[in-house]
Length: 254
Picture (cartoon, rainbow, N blue to C red):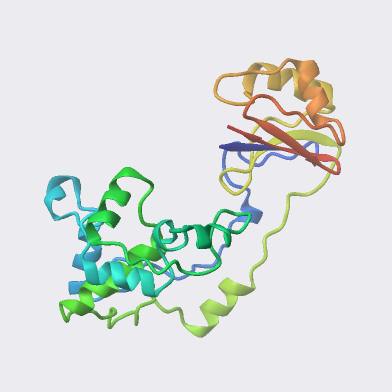
């Protein structure tokens, strides 16, 4: 998905195209990934279990996200996960209690087997990041190796000196200066100029007709671009959408 925004900037505005505007980049260094745990926050043994969760392409035999054990299933159930098994009606009485969202307001009493959960994981979307963290901790504790990185204390990043941390946290982004010019911006990378600056919307629309797409390789005519720039104009084109906020047109491109 991509985004474009129409901005009014000075006619002599010359920020580099397709490069994030300096006002959107924090100039002060922030926390860096911990070199010891590679940002995981785990000790070496637990990180090894975490790395094997999905398995590397060269070591797929070590993958275990869809080969969990019964104690790991129980940990998920105890944490209120696996609603596809525990929040669906199992009998007529429970069927009467189903909420409009399709779930029961309570657990149905079922404890799924590891085989059931593993089959569900393979066929469907599978476990999310919450399930993953629960499973990693459960397996590591069963193997008596669970622990956090002693260097970053489980945070996964280095600690900044107080003064550097304060400067990093207190920084606030600022928009480019406003002016009489018209320019198309991309917001997918934080905010960067996408087109040259033009004196009027008509000139920018002509440029967009030749150089910008609404999604994939689909282009609009200059007239259609002008409609996009118009205040409160909304375009719904197949899977794309355009949402105008005040006098800035921001639209998502699929």
